[in-house]
Length: 315
Image (tube, rainbow, N blue to C red; front, side, top):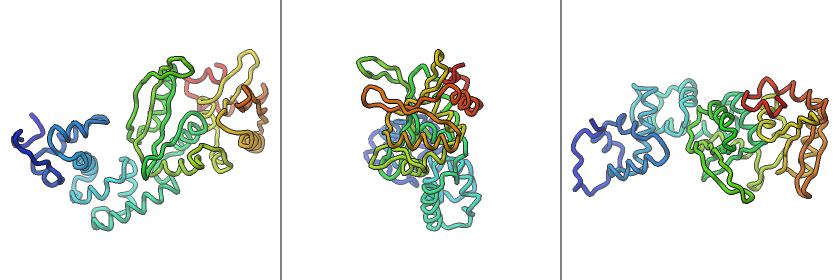
């Protein structure tokens, strides 16, 4: 049994443009269930001669009405900019969506998204925040696409369990990418796993926090977000442990000397650690923690290190 309610004849030459027209012709739930991954929307649109934007609206309407089955269908489009089920729930607890007009809902959602850009804790947990902060200090990035941004990270296939661990923490967000690929780096083939969320207003906050003129930089504002868990994730991303010397190195290669001095000062003041700023290949700076400081650092971050990354602290 297909999602089509009546026969859709091949000789039809018009394209269904409006959501109301699609409602009359198809079972929206069955239509929505066919959208499993990136690219399915366009395939379905071509197959059924429905505009891709309308297919997206179908998916959003089904998602929203699954949470609020008695809501007027027209209001679903107003709420469609609330991209996660969690924020949909939080928003509905703050505002009476049943008794608020469609136009007013549009205004409230716009206001909500602006608030999220300034305060991500409206919709994310401390654990999610720490993961994002630690990852951005390490290997991750925030990419801006038009109005909004997305969180992206790549790890080698050897760290498959680690990226799955990150995925589980961030699974509240919708992912646009989660796949393996091979790339050539320094004439060597590297097997990577890529993870990327879909764009969301909340990631604009992190984009503005970390990037100046499209370059990731370190600032006091960023370092003030560091705690043992986010530091643990930073070590998992950029750290290495010398078994012979018993110390940890943070490969903070992308930051300049001024930023390293800022990090060193922060570690000293807030964690009682005094890393040495190293320099290699006449272009890269890094941080090395003395043996005793490494022990102190490991004791602090060990509870937050996933088992698959314990080798980063010498286990």
